[in-house]
Image (cartoon, rainbow, N blue to C red; front, side, top):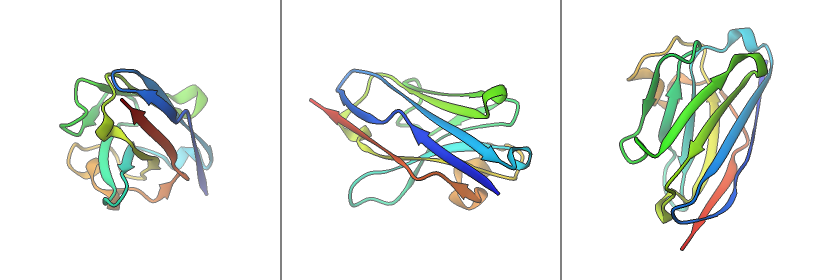
Length: 127
């Protein structure tokens, strides 16, 4: 099975930056698209960003487009989420997810496309 571990969360000031990491282990050859989702307090989990197996294709939710960047390092079996210009509303638990499906803009934004999830890492943005 695939196992995902997130790291890099913490406290940041509004306007600041954080970089989240997600490292995969196990049957990594079964992973195609990967993505990041967030869940704020009292809210449902929401799509943030996704990336293809090659790293050549990406997709972003509108609220983070232009501020966040998803990337992939296949040699390290790791994806990253570079979070710049952080806002208070970015405060949430961020989850990494892996999909057995090849990347598509629409499908990779849906929770149902992913079959493996990390434990989540807390991001807190303060004023």
